[in-house]
Length: 290
Image: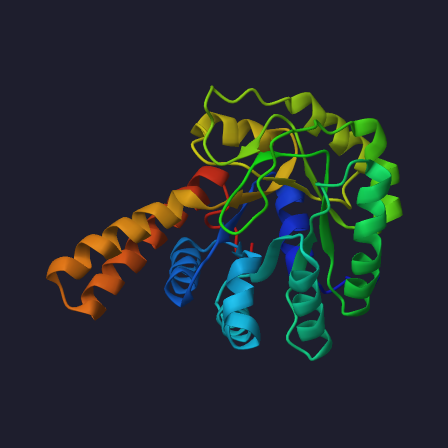
């Protein structure tokens, strides 16, 4: 297999097999990346260090290499993933870096803005094939999530995933990880979330155990809903603001009265604490090396 030793897939397949979830935490800078790794090592948990394209664009190869070194030298399994790569410039940068030897462990080619599934496939497939040559598995989105996050396109019209189309969609794109639309959205939920978990169950039956399922749009979700998603077949869980917001708040407050190194360390610990909570909630704490 092309991806037989891929770090992201090893982490997700093990989680899928054992019935726990993997925190895929968005990191914006060196300190948040350090915090995630610190928390994972404390909890003895596997994890995914996730970057948005906006972060890749300002940090480019040196920052990606920093994250790869940090993750791969950790004492627990951690991979580095590019989330929501939609624009050509983001995909070109990620893949050109990979071709130079600075490669993400996995990337998301997000063409969910396309009007049709066929257009989605047509946009994604060339990048999936190029990524595969670098040994990088790709996540794709079937359906469309409403909302937006830092540096991402804002989508105003959602479209639920049709599980009957999933097998063909995965085959035609050549992708390995699927992000479905099940009533989740990016950003704040104005009403209580109404997740269609039967879609996840059907996807799990249709796709078998070779295509991990990723949950996007997790801001403000109750703990029990996370547990239900994992129970029904989700293995990769994207998290952003749960850790980002306390990090920013603690840092901004700390800098008013404390020396910069002290304020940074307190903020790093706030980010790490949020990650630790999710390792325990998702059931991955203590699973590294088991």
